[in-house]
Amino acid sequence: MRRLHFALLFLVLVLAAQPLVAVTYYVTRQPTLLCTSSKSPYSIFITIQDAVTQVPAGSTINVCPGTYPEQVVISQPVTLRGVSYGGQSQVVIAMPSTPLAQTSSIYFSSVSSVAAQVQVTAGPVNISNITVDGTAESSNCPSDSYYFGIFYSSGSSGTVDEVEARNQNWPRQQNLWVVSGSGSRPSV
Image 1 (tube, rainbow, N blue to C red):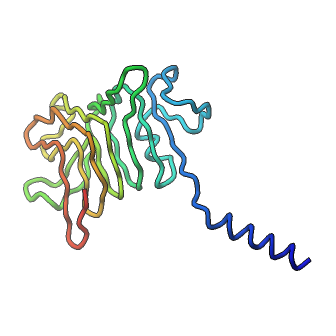
Image 2: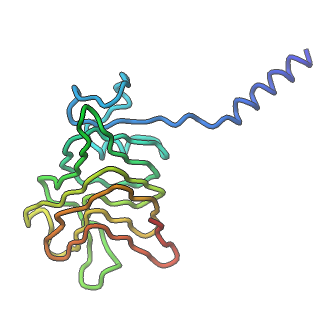
C-alpha cells in the first residue's frame, strides 16, 4: 500500500512539474477562410479585440489574412501574429469607421489625451507580420489629442517584428511610440 501511495505521489509531482501546453487562437473575418485546421469554435474569433480580451494571458493569437477595421487595446501579455494562408499574407489593422477612443495622457504637455489604433498597456506583448494602416478622415482622429498607429504605454513591454505602421499623417500623428513613465520603462 505504501508503494502505491508513493507511486501516485510521484506521478502527481511529475505531472505538476510539466509546463502547461500553450493554446493558439485564431482571428478571421471570413469564417470560410480558416487559416487553421482547428475545428473548435472556441479558438476562433472574428475581431482582434475580442481575441486579445478573451484569451488567457500568454496565449498566441494567429490573425488570418484580411483587413480588420478596428481599434485594438491589449492589456495582457500575448503574442499577436499575422499568418499566411492560401497565397495571402497581408494582415491589416485599418482605421475603424468610428472615432478612436482616447485615453488620458500625462506625457504630452500640449494635449490631455492620446488615441491609438493599437495600444499596448501590459507586457510582454509581441506583435509580428501585421500592418497598421492609419488612412482616415479627420473625424477619426480628434484634433485635441495625439494619434499613434502603435502605442506602447508606460509599464508595457514586448517586441515588434515585421510590422508596418503607415499613413498616420494627420497633425500630431506618429507611426510607433513608446512611452517611458516615472519608474517603469517600457521595453520594446
